[in-house]
Image (cartoon, rainbow, N blue to C red; front, side):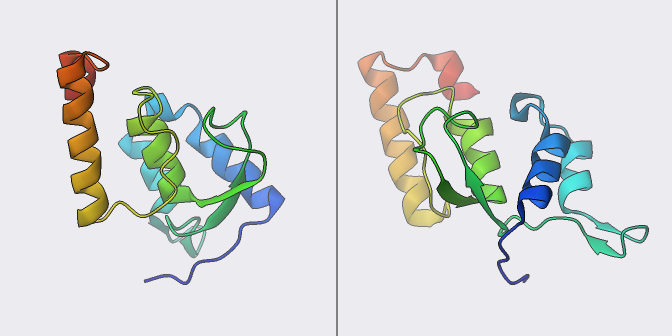
Length: 120
């Protein structure tokens, strides 16, 4: 597993340019970000790479929030549109996943979340 590394401002800019709109995330984008490339002689980014994000990049964070590339993508792709979690700035492991499932179920039963949102 790769050692966590803090990305420079230039590297972060490249990460966000390649990522584009996380709501339109494709397998090709993931490959460009995280796959090994002979041309680059390595991997461009790791999910554990540390980045600093701003409210412009996620409506649920304070200025200069430190997170990782992987956590950022998960939040933008899965959680931000649901709007019941805020920004989950930790690894999604078994315990965290159970808490997320419980909150999703509760939100759906209370009407805060539609069946379509839950399915997505």
